[in-house]
Image (cartoon, rainbow, N blue to C red):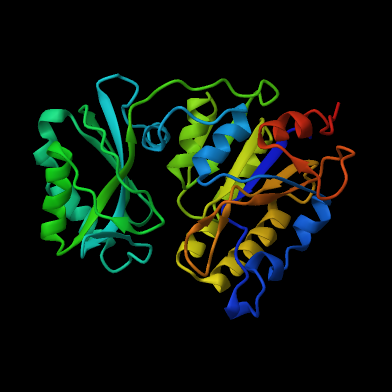
Amino acid sequence: MSNTLYVLLDGAEDDPNPQMDGKKPLELAEMPFLESVAPHKLRTTGRGYTHLFLNEFFTGHAPEVPRSALEAIGLGLSIKDPSRTAYRLSPAEIKDGMVRWSYHVEEFADRLKATMEANMDMLAPYNPEIRFFTGSRAVLTMDCDIVPETPSPPVDAPFVEIPGIIGDFVMKVYEEMGGITDYPWACGKFGHQYDPFPCVEKLTAISDSPTSLGICASLGHDIMLIDDLDPRFPAAQEALEHGDVFLHIDEVDEYSHQKDPFKKKWVLEHTDKMMEKYFPDVENIIYFVDHGTSCVTGEHILMDVPLWTSIDTGLPEGHMLPLNTVIPTLVGNRKVTK
């Protein structure tokens, strides 16, 4: 099979962890399938956020569309009309003048979602559309020109008051939730998107993340939103019969934000077992990492990142491929089955 499987181990790089005797989860994770099918070990340039990395990975250019608008596309929300603005909403505690992002939301996620939905009538004159996803995160779009500049997760930051109706909505939820709300960031309108590399003709993206799905959908690719990890693998196996596949393992990053190196190691090893089960004969595979995410601090790390592949480019081990050259270089050398 000539089709290519792209596997993103989101945030797999890390800091040395004192809970693991100074080792990283990625160093300790046993991943024999990856080692056997992707022996060519290169590196590329990391980016601070997944959407920055993926847009350049698939097009050769940094994005000109804000993350919230890309995620709106990934969730099927109306955004391309110039009157629409998108707001990415993430659970956070506002206290002592600070926005503290919440990654352990199990105890209040359902209540936060219900409170948001109960107050949507405030936004009714603006034709709102909202879609929730992992951990009561959401994307909201509406006919509104307010584009606030607010801090972005995962780093806690000073609270920025949000103007207009969107600010009234956020603070009403805050009052009813006793200090918890879905706080907006990466807000904006749809803009110019670059063309994808022509060597990636037909691709299906499979993820629980509207970020990666939105980028792929904005490039004209098919997308599948699958919340749970395990069902993504058989879906990817089926899609690979018909074209290239991008498979996103977002949980690696999520457990890093939770500062749980043992969960991170587990999901890397579990992913390897599932890859062996569903892709034992894969010929063209590219494993990659978009950035580091520290299990020590819970924050992203801007760094060079690993790139493992089955595709022999003739480049030496550890060679540094600029991010905007990864796909042209690797796809130009992939095996073609006649």
